[in-house]
Length: 90
Image (cartoon, rainbow, N blue to C red):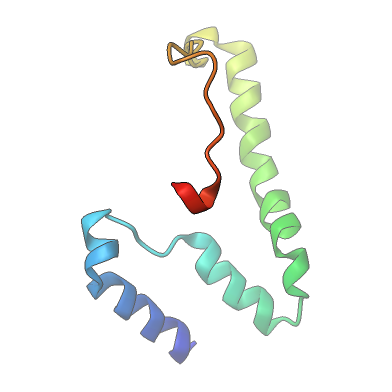
């Protein structure tokens, strides 16, 4: 936990994080707890998703019974055909 708190302090003082208004999220802290509970790190994503599924289902349920809560359809207006640029040339 000491290491996590130090990483958080460093991140919150770093210009990169400050300029972009980035903060350690709940997964940062959840990961520490899951690690302490000896869960394999390759299972973290699944465990995060399981925890969020209740919220996703609640949101879906609200949208089904109150269509005003549904998000507007998003339409892409950008270019149709873009040329792939290898990462070395970007």
